[in-house]
Length: 145
Image (cartoon, rainbow, N blue to C red):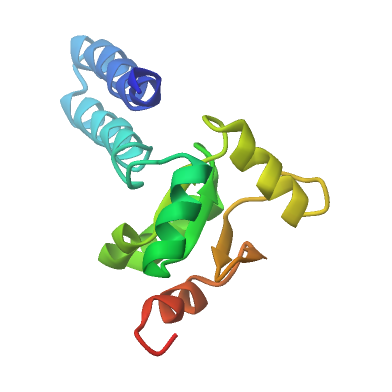
C-alpha cells in the first residue's frame, strides 16, 4: 500500500527542490507556478484520484452480489485516469482492481484483450469491455442499465 504513495510524494519532493532553486535565484513567481504544477501532478496520481483497489476475486464476488461493474486499471494509465475523472463521484460505485497488484486481474485483462494488458477493461454482467466510453460506463450504473 505504501508503494502507491511513492509517485505523488516524489512529485511534491521534486517540485519543492526545483522551486527552492528558483526561489534562491530570485524568481518567486516561477517557483510558485512550478510548485503548483508538481502538486497538481501529485494530485492526479493514484491513490489520490482512483478509488481503493480490491482483488479480482473480491471484485467478482462483490459484483455478483450487487451487480456493479468491475474496472481493471493500472497506475500511470491516462485512459484509466480519464475514465475516473469523467465518472466523477459515481466512480466510487464501481469495483476497482489494480492489475499491477493482482496477477489474476492481469490474466483476466489479457484474456479479454487478445493477450494484451489493455486498461481500463470494464466487466459488466460477466462480459468484458476494453477501454469503453465513460458515458457508457456511467449508463451501466443507472438502475435501468
